[in-house]
Every structure is written in C-alpha cells, then in structure tokens.
Image (cartoon, rainbow, N blue to C red):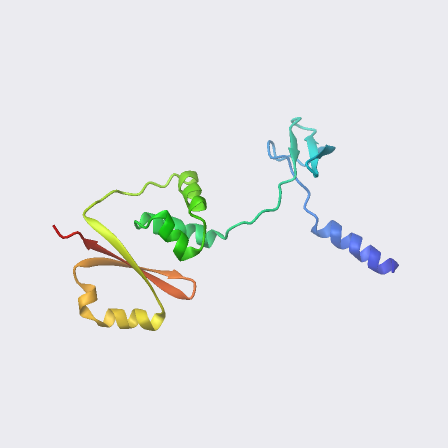
Length: 154
C-alpha cells in the first residue's frame, strides 16, 4: 500500500504541469484563491493574476492547414465543414486569426471531388478530364481531394 501511494504521488508530480505567468512567462508565483472552481495564481515578478488554462478540445494543426488551404482554393466555409467535419465557425476564426485573404477572380469556379487512390488513377486515365481546367490534388486522410478550376462559360 505504501509503495503504491508513493508511486501515485511521484506520478502525479511527474506529470503535473506547473503553470507559468502568461504575462511575463515567470515561474515565480503564489496561490491567490479559487475562482469558478479553478485555482488562481499571482505572479511575484509582475503582479499579474491568472488561472490555469482550462483543458479544451484542440484541433490538430493538420486540419487547420487543410481548412485554410481549402479556403484559399475557393471552397466556402460550409463546404469545408462538410469535408473535414470541423465547425465553419472555427474555420472563420482561423481565417481571421491568420489574416488569410482569398484572391478574388470571378472567371474561374472550383469544383471538388473526394476520390480513393484507384478512383484518382482512373480519373487521370481519361484525357477529357485533363483539358480546359487547372487541377490540384491534396491528401485528405486516406483519400484524395481533387480540386478543379473551370472557366465560366459566357
């Protein structure tokens, strides 16, 4: 029992993250009460009061990059939401956060298809699919996304 208790305390201390001041990144702080069931700290160096960051759902950077890439390719927020399964509001927030500006060109319209590797090779075997449009292929998990720009017919 004593060994298990010591192991538990050791493991807790080993894996416990100690916060640092978000204002000055100092690790010299004291406890300063509890607010909303979260420990509050006061930095000794700059006097800043802060709480430990709450644990939340963090989306992998791979999906952030893919969402921004698809946005730049001309897809709408809702289309990206349906493809990646990430909220369109999150995508809008990332576009604002990283200050992404999409070039505006009304002569082209992107269409997209999600294909497996064999479907993609079959797609490129047909020469009609290769003429009259630009094509971009990006990995999307175990499948591939083919984005094709076609000119609007006047």
